[in-house]
Length: 416
Ligand code: HAM
Image (cartoon, rainbow, N blue to C red; front, side, top):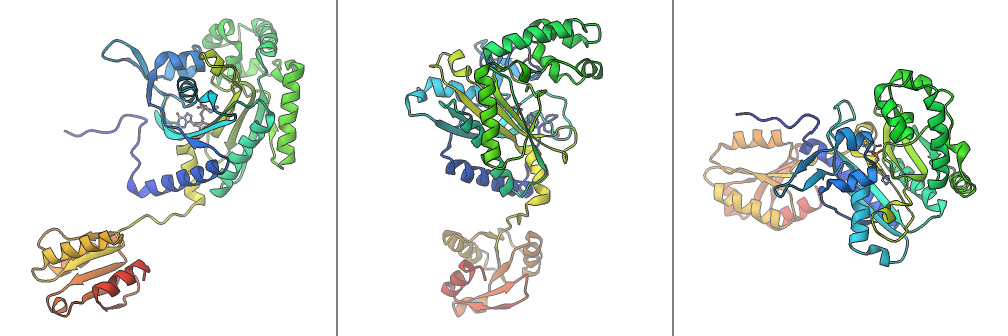
């Protein structure tokens, strides 16, 4: 019987994983400089957590969540994103008692039952960050600054930073009323999904990809024109922050994001290099979510980077040597056990080693060493062993010689 991975879910093979590790390492380094600390939350949560935060009439919750009943009949879900879980953990563990800002980052798999295509998977990975407790737009600016630094570290260029403000409850209500009126007049043009959305959440219509709906949106009222005084001030100060850090950006008043919890700042980092799935990172503010989940009123903001899309961009910009075993220990005659002992000894001295485990001719062992791509072959030979030395050969330069165990360790440690 042969099995394949599920549609939209991929293996990350050793030949690719080094790039993943490199990116994760860069993220950790940069985020920790900004005092973010790692948080790890479960992959499976109560489904209600996502229904209530992302929103019941969003694509993610309506169509894309992996929801199932556990053995006790509880409705659980594979997490489609990280923010809701971090908010839950923040409240459940009373992390709000610690001084603000509290900053967290996470790296891990997310699950959305989407139609797979380039850059879109059913299991994908995010590197995300969340900051709790600060209302200031300086935090929003800093998030963009940090993600930009991260992309720069990976040599990724030609990214566009698109920003918008979705206002607070007050301005959103006013905007929704206007939007409803505008769209009601055009209801006949809207697709069947949007006709339904009009009643429940007209903001979603701005996200619709159906061309008739996009046409209806040409002169749609924009949220930026409905922001209350405080939200407008917040949005302008956010832009001042970006200007002061020389971060180029576009205000795109049509960004509404596919998740309902956002308030005020939202942003997307896009590229033209990835085709249709052009967002590499996205995020924003969600000032009501902690309270909605029973925590104290706590402003919050964050973003998540899509790892698979980032990997696609990095294959061009980051060169990583794939890790190969450094040394191959081969043997002549019947010295298999001596070779195993030497291999163990070298590994105990932190030298990465591959070796033979079966009876084989020296010639076939050397062929294997070559296929492994090792740098140095060390040969345990009868005659050399009597003189307490080992023969070695550098497979790259062709240089060869003899060395005592002490000299061998020194040589290998120094990477010669
Ligand atoms: P999101 O926009 O749904 O936001 O996802 C963030 C990023 O994850 C996207 O920009 C994209 O790069 C990647 N992504 C999303 N879906 C897929 C998929 N099916 N396949 C591959 N990559 C994908 C969030 O998830 C929010 N939790 C971000 C956030 C954090 N907001 C505040 N804090």
